[in-house]
Length: 148
Image (cartoon, rainbow, N blue to C red; front, top):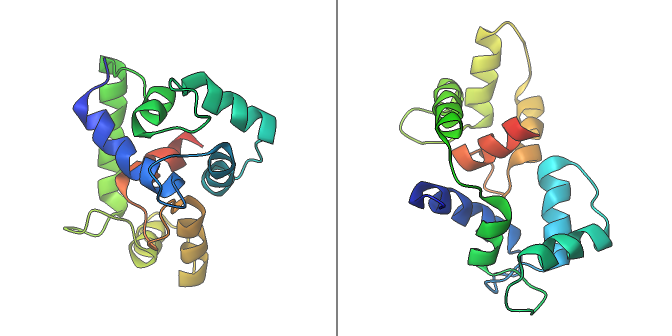
């Protein structure tokens, strides 16, 4: 069974993959977002196979529930523990009260860790995992980044 928290986490990911905001993800949209999020080229055939894997109504598109079945797996105690650890790590980088990592907050935290990066470098790092294009990394995007 997929937890409600998992559903909420992937709703924003689904919205960012749904480039044309039609409530469905095509194989082409899936390819584009996987390239942006993971930096990996996925072949058209592989993207179509992924869509076919979860497409229950046969329209060759993924609605949000089909997408959830494709990407979410039931959370185990181990996964919940990992998620807590990721939240702790995320909290070190995020802007307090904002719930996101900005280029400036990333630059500050990296400096504390002894790694000097300019603001433009930090913006580039943020862009790589900023799935919805808002210029910051939210927790869902942070999880994707940590899994890459």
